[in-house]
Length: 132
Figure 1: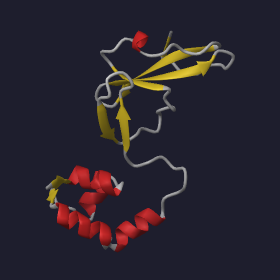
Figure 2: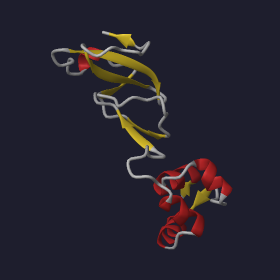
Figure 3: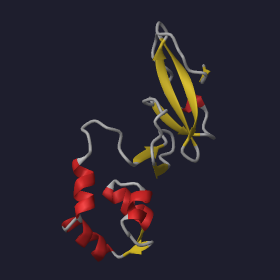
């Protein structure tokens, strides 16, 4: 049995859309396979409406230090991360920024991550993130 959240992740749709279209709280693997093999019209339309290069509905985040993984909905305000790290790891656990770059921390990523973004020192930073 798989949960509605897992079904939504596998179909790359939101949980709200899954609920709206009657996806049950739990589904057997056989029922999911059938849904994938013969998608209903709403799922076909949802997939057809996707723009190439658009943000995915679900994103898998992994810590670059310990490998902890979490799947969740990405936020529009997230920049492209150079590294992701669990909050309890030290920045020294990762490679330092390359010459001519500085590193910003972006907190509030998932349940336990900090995003690290390496930026060019010559570029002006508009972020209020912590620099080091």
